[in-house]
Length: 184
Image (tube, rainbow, N blue to C red; front, side):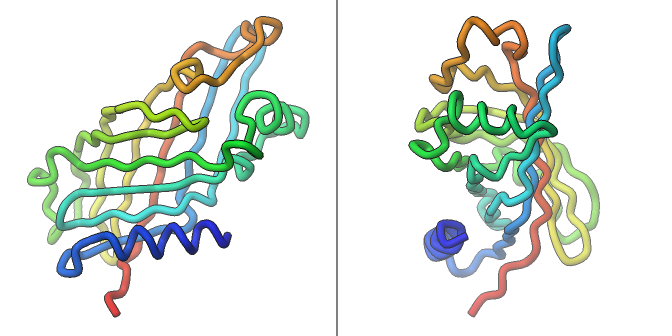
């Protein structure tokens, strides 16, 4: 939690003072893989993030050890063998809504957007572009997206023995519920 507090301080202090900012400390990121041999699902609801409604910039950070699986052994293998969470404890995304002008922040509604940015997993950063929705609601903003990643693109080594149990593409779900950040 100390790392999350430091992240918020750095993120918030780095944005322009005149733009409305929104934040969350409990966003959700999950991933899913299904093969004929196994279904793998993990969720993490301790995702910290900030979105700047004036510029469309968004960032979030997720602690790898906060992903939870149905079976404890899967969680252990995920942290120790694949993600090496002691060595690479977090993943981050820094990006921007490319079509922010299509979002009317003064009117409740759901808007389809594209977000481009840098996704860092396992200390490897790749450029990504993903489709999603921004939902303007009274008192906040919800952001949602589903996209696929390939673990090998992030130098996550999956041994051949279990490779058939894990789909080559993992489906990632992002669901963030942002509240206004008070200007002080």
